[in-house]
Length: 488
Ligand SMILES: Cc1cc2nc3c(=O)[nH]c(=O)nc-3n(C[C@H](O)[C@H](O)[C@H](O)COP(=O)(O)OP(=O)(O)OC[C@H]3O[C@@H](n4cnc5c(N)ncnc54)[C@H](O)[C@@H]3O)c2cc1C
Image 1 (cartoon, rainbow, N blue to C red):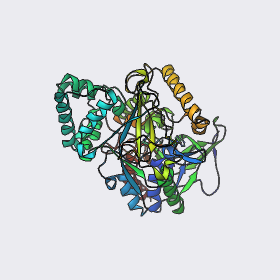
Image 2 (image 1 turned 90 degrees about the vertical axis):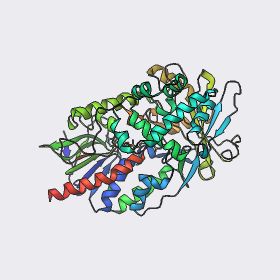
Image 3 (image 1 turned 30 degrees about the horizontal axis):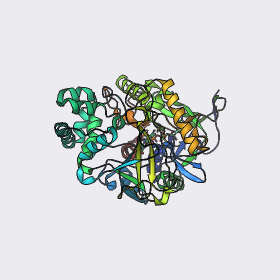
Image 4 (image 1 turned 120 degrees about the horizontal axis):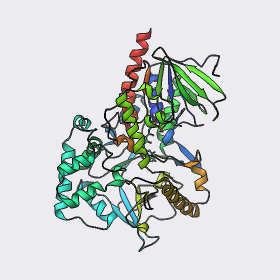
């Protein structure tokens, strides 16, 4: 039976479930406004997919390894705006994208392709030609450029209107050249799911930046990793402005009374044998929404029928997303100037298997010196596990094992160091933001007063990857302040 924990510190104005970038962003913003809040985090440290782990004396990023991509200027990102609002420094460096390819013909050797921002969207044809080993015809290039132009001209509002149009339908109606069709339909590594299950709005939104930025520009922390650059300063800000961090506690349910949020029920073990209650008139669920729903933290009844359908779509899409990143920046944290995606053509079509960080190759395309390996894995090298193709779980496991064995050979102990809940990091990416949704979800529960959603989801069309967490913090903070003052 749930016990109401006594004592100061269990009653707050706001409770935030999850201490990832979403939870920390909302928490810090509310703390700035003098609102009393607590972040409840199931792990022993904050950071979510931005957290670092220790390996071989190095701090290693877990999942996320760059801040925001596909933007022409870091200053345009919400993360940058957010840090400025809090008067916190955010030092970054911009790194143009490069790619490497490993082929069966040249085992142990990496061929590199460095992107040239001046080439604009044409970089992507170079990329596909490089990865696939086939140069597209001029007519195909023309059609692909046409598509980049269409996307560039679409406003965020227009993108928003077509989040319920499957990309496959759009291609059928708008792309004539058969080769261009084939190329687009097989853009698995970029879209991460079958074109039938991703919406055109999000695809267009990402692609509209291709012409603008010229090539994906990767915005890296200037020093250290994401934990140092983002999580630690936000945690410090949050706690020094009165926020309370409660770790090693898993929220099991949200307490609702008469249609209003009243707090959360929390356990500190797997068996729910020790349940505590924390009360607050506002609860912000800052766990990616499909995860929160599938794990019953967020009851489906707190959503409308349309929204529940939309979340089902995210859940479905996250199955296709098989990425699990291992990153090792032993030597590269301060010296790296670039990174590269490695393609392993061992099993036929090129497959994204990892990242390598290195020093000198970005501008003078050289093989990276020394053992500066940052490895990541997307188990896509076996039949039925390919990125973008519906996967069979046993095949995924087989691919993962193959990759782990290879990593273990190169870096004994690495797999263990990054082990997380019995699995190697997350087996899903933020691709669910591309799901074809019947309706976009708002930041606020439609039927429960005081319940807000601050974790990753499709709510923010115009913003790539985790930058949307920072975007959402602004309106959530505004609405929470309004709601709290209405209660007084
Ligand atoms: C492999 C991978 C690579 C990625 N790479 C990038 C990248 O390079 N750049 C980028 O911008 N974005 C990237 N993303 C996307 C980015 O990770 C997400 O957009 C971002 O982390 C979402 O933040 P969040 O706070 O909603 O969720 P999370 O980061 O997942 O944080 C949620 C937190 O809630 C906690 N939690 C969950 N359930 C409970 C519970 N019941 N009780 C208490 N706590 C709970 C978790 O432990 C976690 O700390 C990547 C994602 C993945 C999976």
